[in-house]
Length: 565
Image 1 (tube, helix red, strand yellow):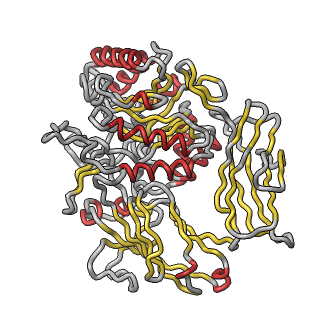
Image 2 (tube, one colour; image 1 turned 90 degrees about the vertical axis):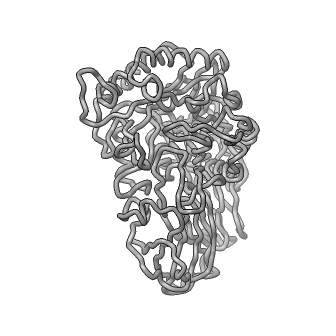
Image 3 (cartoon, one colour; image 1 turned 180 degrees about the horizontal axis):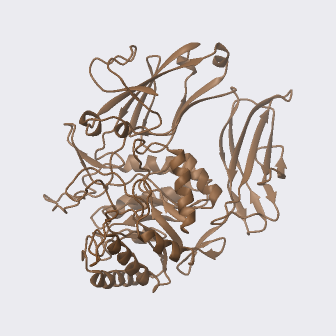
């Protein structure tokens, strides 16, 4: 538990917080504390904790690491500013020896949950403590992932990346290993899943060979381990680090998505990190429960909508053979996005209003750097529902697609999710991407309650998109209907569980008509919290599960379809 309070002029980094509450870390402060001064406040907040260190540890190199702080952080150790970071969903760290002391240490973190036209996610902030959000989920904030201090010798392994080449039987691993400081010799070992040595070198640069490769497959997450050790001249072990990796190939060919040269059909969800009390904070029991649910209904994939998930979630996806579309926090890149479509005036467009390029580049860099060796990650989604049909969109996205490819040694496919309001007639960017991902709400936001018209509209939309991009496969990454749990209707009226079942049956019927539709990820896995507005009664209710993971009627249909598809 940490001390926490909203910012005030009297706060002095050299003194204890004057009026603190208690909050759990990791966790979202605005899910734990009651009252509008926390749940509605936009601005700055302070965290404080103390930790003890023995004098012997000061001889080591000590690093303070945050899994994520949403959305910006200034970190103070014993009254000294030691690091800053912007971006709420990726880790950051720094060496702290200069200001460490034996015994008690005071750690404070100043957190901002302000989003504006320069940040990801993007929002409209007037500087008065009020936000106009351009996305449909609650702005949970705070220290939402693990905080740790780790120690190394002055000579240490700084970074490991694990490129490889494989023909699915024989694999050559070409690790890229960065070491800081002096060392005499090294050892690099590959271990299989039973901890048996399959390859070993006594230097950091030589390739390692694996014969009879065990492939990482969807549903069967076979993992190797790369173990690196560095030694002093007298044989003393200076540092060791072990990193898991899986071996698989990805290819898009003949409008199919091939994993290990076999067609893969995406079955799953867009999935928020969202729960009572923990908010968007890392919640390992919930993650474990969700993984069991996904497996039980035949889901094989999810999208990290709309931000990078925590590192343990990604590690579990590797182990379980889950397939992941890994998404940046680039959401809200659409001026005028809200439930009631507003008209843009005075020639204002998204791309002459936003200044998010630097934040977007950093988000891509940090995501790819963190997740490049996860075999579960088969595609990068660099934006959710941007204004892809407005002037300037192509100039904005072309360099970002190029950057993503340059940073990723695997050159994985890159995508974005297309908003329904920017349809094939207006789109300026889809040809830049490898897979076209469509978010469509026919039968809900369009032709509400009229599933026959929705079916025709959906089919027509697929045909027209394919005519425009005949060489690209399509995944439907969002589609669904708000459904009040327990609401039943003999007429199958909107908001009833019966209507949700009928809508999904309609979509599935149409999807199955087209071989180039290669996936269905429903929106959403579970109901989730949103900002309050006239169409959000107790949040977004498009989940096939309630927020506390009770199944709605649609789950039986999904299980029947997915376990047999």
